[in-house]
Length: 455
Ligand code: PHE
Image 1 (tube, rainbow, N blue to C red):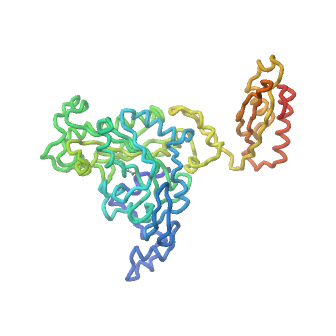
Image 2: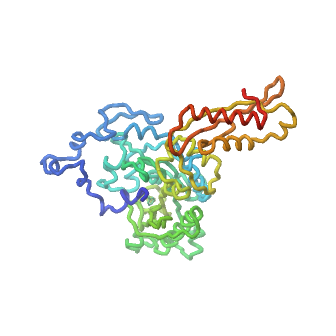
Image 3: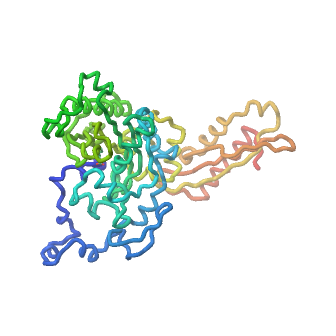
């Protein structure tokens, strides 16, 4: 199963996992009279724990570690990679599909994932004793700052902004988010989310279309289906529009025949709340997003008391893994060109099936040559012939070949090309001498067949 994005922490406050059952907290210790979490911290050193007062640089800011700090260097190293803003990364491509699909929403990107504790939790009504606030679940930079655990941390600051930015109550927030978790094929400390939000006011077209005159009904009590003082009919309009729009998007991406189901959920910041599950190609139901009607208290505090609205949070890795058949969440962070090259020229809604890359190292060799002199041969010159020769001779050992440099010599107008060939086998680590042998054969074929002059 892929990361259960919201299930694990922001969801039901009622079925919080009992952290005391984990091995980190042996029974003998729990029985000791003066047991408390803070003491526990120092008894069992965890990854990310640091001596107090150590300086931590994250982007342009320096923080001092304190007893809350638990963010490891390995995680800090990921900050600033900005995969969702890096063309050629699948996470960027999926972000683009969202930017395009929600084009009438203002798109906010806060490139610094360090937020204050208030934004990540209090601003969206996460209770004081909620499991997600624990050091076991969230990366604390210090007692006052965390690495945002979800894009919902930015909701509050965007409500007002989006009206100033000319997009009446509609925005998306895309960003890297961080959670303490196991690391495996489907879980990673850092992943990406897109928050989509839309606010409505009394005479919005959608309300008029549905004959809803007033968003509010002061006599309405809080029920399972509706917040207190909301007009149930308005809530229904908001729910329908949110659900239709996001299902359309997911089906646009993953296919119109995709099976989906809405499941009731709980989040501290929305009511009512739902999750969307989809049926994966291997027949499992997979949670794709959490959403709901924004708690009115949040909007009231942000000066939007004449609006009601919906919010949803979508995990980008899951979409990308399904869209391109990428088997391991860690691949998004790789700098391996065998991975990246497969996405480098794709358009946002262009679907490919990812070809697994070898786990053995690449051997990178260049070939530089002068193109043939005779005019006739220059005229019929085609890079495709170079690629054909490279593939013919290199076969399975060639992972990639690119023209990396081309220039004209001033004195006689001769043209020089440099091709970079990346050799790699799926089965074993290639040796320099065997790659050399192949590389020379390629050179020879280029001379014999295309009449180039090796430089
Ligand atoms: N922030 C929630 C999570 O990450 C998802 C969510 C967003 C739920 C907005 C409801 C509304 O788990």
